[in-house]
Length: 415
Image 1 (tube, rainbow, N blue to C red):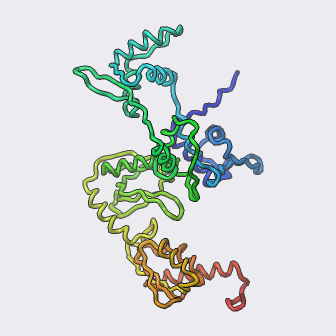
Image 2: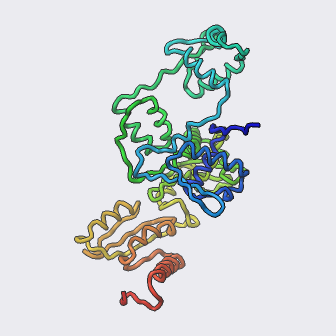
Image 3: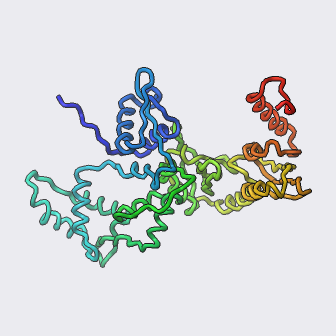
């Protein structure tokens, strides 16, 4: 008896997306590390990943089995290799047959009704089959409706009859091609730009990127659904990986971290909490719900809140005023002042003397500012936040770091 052949096609994108995410972010991963599904499910998804992304797969022997990870060096690629994951969809015999037949029937400029298309299929295509294969009118109607939704076909009413015609292919100018080449790697929904360029042959890559977040590709459907909800001012049912129950949520903005590259959606929770953040890579799916009656009010509220945001976090909705006095030589270390002005967000920089400056900012998120402030260790003369507990914690963390590098009893003067 022959074993069932392995099928590379996928029905549920969320499944393969979660496996790719695990192997790319947290690999190396072994079979035993995935407990949510059966070992057979793991084997199937691992083989799919090895098929789609074979040149980026690293395998390491660990104990009794092999562990797999995905390694993609952003400096070595000019196109996001994860685009290929979106191009493997499950389909049936009817899907394959109807796709090629409909693309052959619907030449640009020609329009047909359902009955006319059905007659053409019977007379010009099915006549060549000897196995009794037939296409039912209901199956054809569903396929035509699907292609209208995908903007492959156009639907119009002529009298009492409904006609379908083919949407002309997008023709891109040279300037548009370059724009798509760039924005498909940088903008949300870059996979759409990838599809547009699939019809172009021999197009040289002209862009390389220093900070490149290939993971975003796996979130494109989630991002599109959230942007649709924001545009239509709707509530959504938001399901996170590992959670069975969906939560009600009103998305207001999609934000991108300039530090980590992670993308977040911010909005209002069912309990009325302003504002809840969710990472897009942790969201499994988004379902549109009813129109929100207070969307504009929530958006205006967030526009006020974001004036004091440093990162995706709040500290009990209290605005803290932070003053950091820094020792910087404005002649020899002008680059430091430029960096503070560029990276200090809505903070201000005040000159006290040629070698003393004060960085001042109002923010909800003192904890989120810690990584930025640590880059000035050795230059901080004074720090005043109005929150003594936070200041003690900040300096305690610096002391812990100091102990990691120097023996107990060592003082700064001994270094």
